[in-house]
Amino acid sequence: MHESMVLSIFVEKSHCIVNTKDIGKIIKERRMSLKVNQFELAELAGVGINTLVAIERGQGNPKLSTLLAIVDTLGLQLDLIMKEE
Image (cartoon, rainbow, N blue to C red; front, side, top):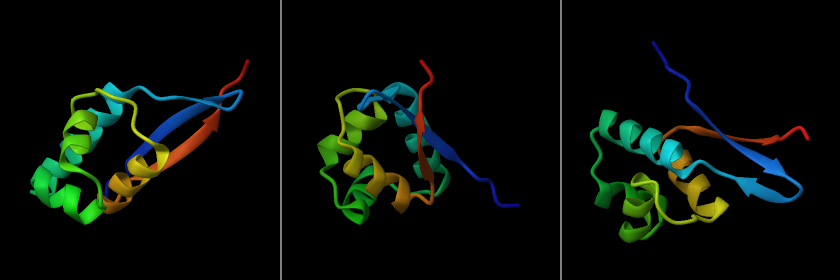
């Protein structure tokens, strides 16, 4: 059975609203389910290990391109949704 996972980022007046704790948790859970360590994922996604660790901890303010690289490597989908006012 294939499980689809979607991460959503809400966009409001050109500002991204990202709950990095939730996204970090999903990234970490997916990485672990694939039995990939942080070093391997960082290398495969082309991001720094410190950046990946911070994202998984829900810290920092990652660039959208960084998140896209990580979620694509993990086979996840990232959706941008316009937030209603």
